[in-house]
Length: 234
Image (cartoon, rainbow, N blue to C red; front, side, top):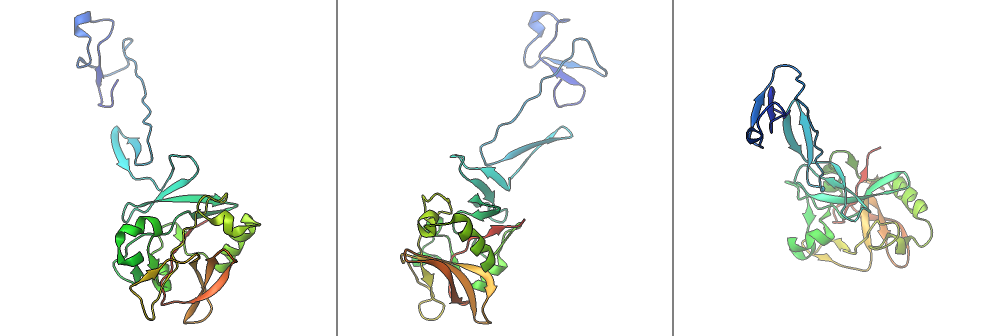
């Protein structure tokens, strides 16, 4: 049998040998003693998932697959097709790289105003923009969710959160983009801060600052630009 209804290919024991070849077609309307079938499994490498439904083969983009090294899950944002590494730490699942969606509206910056750096650093967003562009199934974490993350990682949080650290949270430093004076420039420091959804007041929101001296919750102005790590909805 093949997927097309009523058709078989390749020949069978009732035919002469010269009639049995890949393009040979036999028709059937009911089970026959010469008729069998073989199923095929389609193995994928991240890009696509094959569904076979009602004899039609359709290709859809996955939301979660596995990285080539097997250490991370992968999430694909269906809006622009970008794929992000994700990592489960305790009972939480985090993006393991800075978010890099380019929205149609809102305030955001690339390091040195050059999109060639986006693959490494992602974009930095104002707090309002970061809230508005969450992909489906993810959200901007609260300060309490970051506290849970730090407690789960435990001692030496800074080292373990760096790229190559055991937590695989994979921090890379990009610093801040100021919404006050040099709003079109981003400066790389030896620390980084990620937005939370938690506000301190109308002008400020909490961030997780990761640096060599201390990893802690700090407060930043919502019109400044900082990178984002989203957390997966439970």
